[in-house]
Amino acid sequence: MARYVIGVDLGGTNVRAAVVNRQGAIQGKPAQQLSRAQEGFPATLDAILGTIEESIRAAGVPRSAIQMIGIAAPGHIDSLHGVVRWAPNFGEWREGLFYEWREIPLGDAIQQRLGIPVQMGNDANLAALGEYYYGVGRGQAKGLVMLTLGTGIGGGVVLTREQVQGNAHWQGGVLLVGASGGAGELGHTVVLMGGPRCGCGATGCIEALAKRDAIIERAREKIRRAPNSLLAQLCGGDPARITPKLVSEASEQGDPVAREIWEETGFYLGVAVASFINIFNPEVVAIGGQIAKAGAVLFDAIRRAARDYAIPTLLEMCRIVPAERIDDAGILGGAALAWQGVQEG
Ligand SMILES: [Zn+2]
Image (cartoon, rainbow, N blue to C red; front, side, top):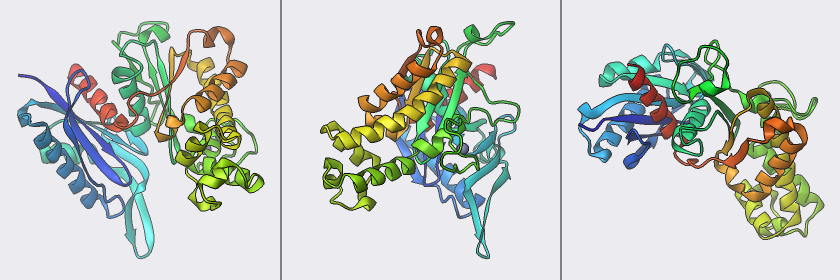
């Protein structure tokens, strides 16, 4: 009998799930429901369970063929114990105060209700693992570092045994998770001391300089100074209507102001990428998230900065490329983790 896993992408707005085979092919249309992230744990748990059940029906495979469930969740995830240590987007309101998820035993809860073993990890970490196996890493690259650009900037580091010296016996790519599961916070790499304040409390992190809102803010500044630019025309002179997608449209049509926005954004990202190259010497640096769809103007700027700041002999064999599985990153990341769990079990 063919065997499958289920990848689950738990987000602050939606929870998505799909049955996935060993080669990373999604079976049927992914199921999706609202994650009810601010209605308390029981409501979110119901949404997750309902979405998983729906994904099994959509795939048309027997329940007994499902070997493992892999969950990609935002926040600090203790993958060993299946516990969400902290997830700031999830929780519940009580008497006007929002109580964030802390120490939520999500893995056990799902396992008990469905009778299928569960593995969990941080969503950005797992996006890197999914991209390693089912995307640009092809399951063969000697190491992959990934940034996911969006409302924040997530990161993940996949290591292979070629990258370590000593007695490593693992096969394929494994995730760097650190001592308590929190490693890979690449978005908080500081590239501009004293720069803009970041959500983490530090200043000048690449997240503060290149997340969605930072790009929009940069664009607003520019059109204030260039009211006749194409970008200003495309948003009808209303700065509130600027989105990264609109900046891309303008730059694709040759607007120099819009190009500058991507060039500056890419510069900061590229300086950080240079550090990742120096630290991990990966064969691939993948850039994912919807904002990575900005295309060549962004990637040229990232590569230029990487060339200026990385050690040349380390840069030589490194490919800095867009992620290939941007839209299903969470599902495929969860699935990749689940398949690793099946192999070990
Ligand atoms: Zn930060």
